[in-house]
Length: 266
Image (tube, rainbow, N blue to C red):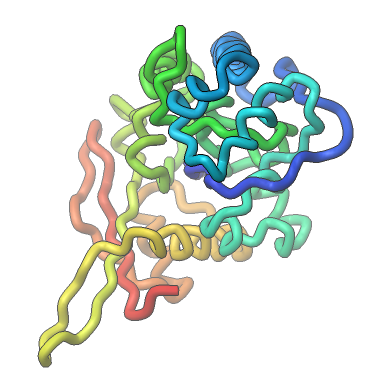
């Protein structure tokens, strides 16, 4: 199983220690594309601050991120699983997993990134600010940049097993499973079911869907569940106490769409 995750806007403070080694990161087929984005981002942030803030979409309160980006080549690096600190990762709770579950996380989780393309949680990277929606001179839209780079690398990483795609739409643009890989891919939507005027109604969960997705992955890792198909994934999540419905059954070339229904959002 390969689990595709979005990154988080929240990241750890700058770390002490050795800087990132691009050659040591997982998925070495992405090295050249990573170097191109890193060089472009650092060059941007070492130039005019107003231009960098506009390109990166930074508010006045986040302008300090420009100086941090400018020092990325020499900044201390941390395992990616420690760099990302947002809602999904808080609920995933990597630091609380036992050794076996953490090793499964190292093998199965892939975090997508505007700067790095995709990394495993053990890959050492510095904290940064660069979302997938950025149009970074001279590379242009990062989604398109990464689509070209991931076209061969990601199908190989997916192997022959299940792909659980929990990315947001911006990060899904960096690689869209195609062909037979799409047929063994499952995407997840979180729905909030509640009673309104005596009737049960459902709405799509936005912010808190990240918390639910983090808990789904945590439960799979803790129980060593290893579903091989989207159908087996439904069975595994149901056995773990989640309410899962198939909203669109996949085909040989189209992903499955699953709904996880919750009665509370937190």
